[in-house]
Image 1 (cartoon, helix red, strand yellow):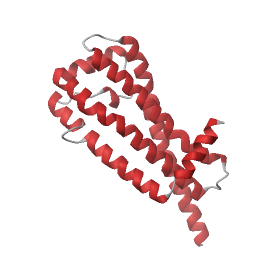
Image 2: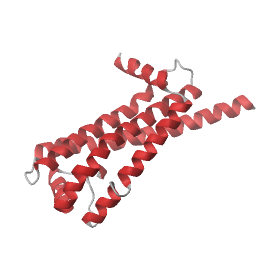
Image 3: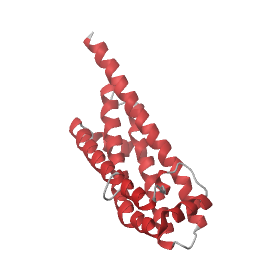
Image 4: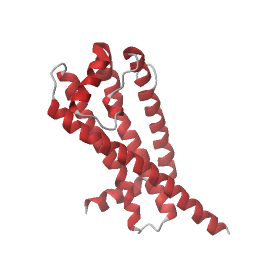
Length: 189
């Protein structure tokens, strides 16, 4: 089964070093996409605080175009030329971090043959949903002022999937840390 194959591949690359390197990659990419001069902080200065579709949990096609209009010409250009390129790297960064962290932590808590270790593939759903969302956002930005309501509707489906699976990934990391800590305390007692 594909889940087993992918999970096993993730387990092979998961180590303490991989967790630390992927965490560093995640932190750097998060700082770039959220900060200045390329990220959301700079965009908010240009637009007076208007937000982007990538940060909305849900929206309708009409709301999507209200948000794009609120960015103005300069904001939409910045979104397309600065935010979007960073958002090609950011999903890879958080997906890599969460997959190797979950895998590494779960194998410290549970037996390697436990079916629960396959939860290391959960972050991949978030990453794929994020890339699908990005494709839709780019299409809408490139076509603007034309309004692609079908594209906006499909893109809006991927946002809650992305955020939900990111949240589940965070919870899995926390649960695995807690499980590992409990096992370590029991082993030391």
